[in-house]
Length: 245
Image (cartoon, rainbow, N blue to C red; front, side, top):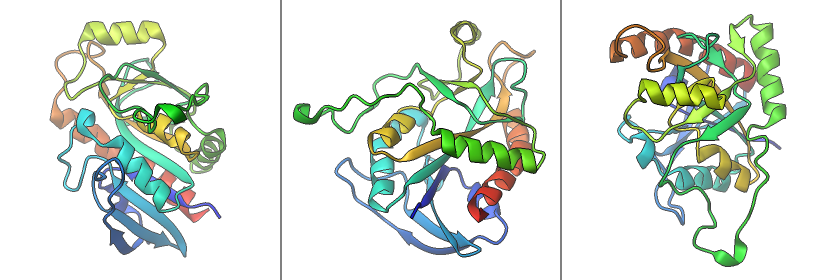
């Protein structure tokens, strides 16, 4: 049987009808995950939740132990992961509060532990990463978004930067030329690590702000929080539908 895991922030508590049943702390060969794993169910369907940045939110993107997070989910039997992430919008369709189901990634991060096999040269694994997001999960999310009439882009290329600082206008210009539609800091190596462990992985991205140089003035936290609140309402609707079905 499939078992769903959600990686994201603290918004899971907003899902109507969701009942938390247990929490579990894990140790992995790669260290400690970002937080305890939370088990919950809705209409009898179980879901595992992990706060990517810790609980409370204290871990910056480049310091997240992605390997421990994904390994722990595999230990707990997760077969499918939906990752929720806040992003910046680059191309015109990626306006603040919009949600996207990306289908491609370009990785600009560095210095992160990108594989489970880095220290074992006898078992180096070269995964096929042509299509980083699982198409079956994406198709189901697309169907549910359409059924709920949610404003949602069904394709998009996610550019993953190092963080924790936001990007320069010149960097965003380069990323747009490279084909990126949105920019975030947590998409990699999360997606690749899930692939190494044969866990189906898809992402829901919510645009928190226009990327650098795409609007007048500087990006502010007040702006980000305002758009995230609006966008997360649609994300919660989509996640609720997915869990229930």
